[in-house]
Length: 359
Image 1 (cartoon, rainbow, N blue to C red):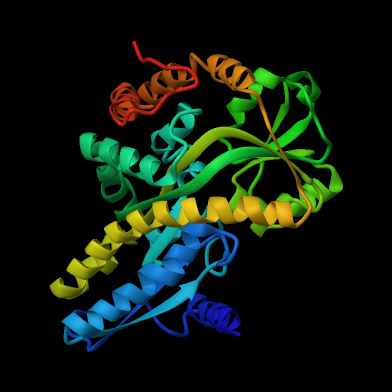
Image 2 (tube, rainbow, N blue to C red):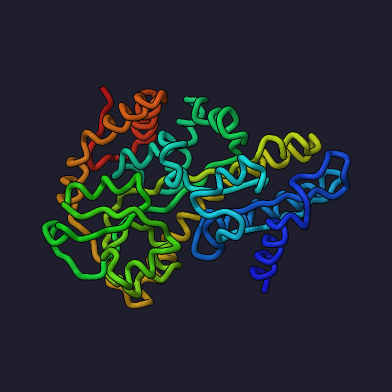
């Protein structure tokens, strides 16, 4: 019933009945629209918005200011889909949005940099910390949100460790040749080594696509593979260890932010950074729970050898450099970002399956 009420309220907002965005700084009660393309439940980054960011902002605003705050929550594409949320924040349809940069390959190509060097960090908290250090080293990554899209980055989030689910069992890399496998886009080049056929897709359409043979596998992390019940049409789940990817942002429209009282602004900024920390913690927890639940549900869990993993990583030796050059051709600091990322991973003491370099 709680979810139904959220979606009904969101529908009213989108029709314009509740009026526009954040109220003025003089209002006692502030109303903000917040949303994401993925639903609450099987999607960790949305859960952290719903269960941590929203209640924590409300609690602190009530406890520390003379204001109260109401969030109109619109998840699961109630206002904007997975590839529409950045634009929804930009236009003011949403005041705050959470979305994966993977669904903005043109506008946020470089922000997908963790995808461009897989088989690195295996822990979500560590991955989040490393990625944050790259953002701190290269301010352009943060500045582009305000300069180009009228919003500010409140905090990062991400996915837990990517592995591979398939409809049919397989034993060797050769078994994956010509198998159609779905993915988010930036991770599809990972499949080149095994000769699989990459298919661009999204989580909400995955179950039906696997069930009907649109593709026969999916590059996916355990929390969502279990949460979206992909194990039903595709029960074989193979531990690959491509790594967790901090490629999600929680952003707020600058116009909405600027209309808020200064004390409320401060709280939202602080809780946004706390959201980032909570995301790493939650992804690690959900990874373990997802794997346990998959086993309980009857999925077949298997692993590849370290030799195969090393060979797979080695096959992508030129991938980071290729993506860095592509970013440079788009006028983006691709070399700087990829060098910073590889440097921060090395500083953290992470053992690569293949040690990439940018020259």
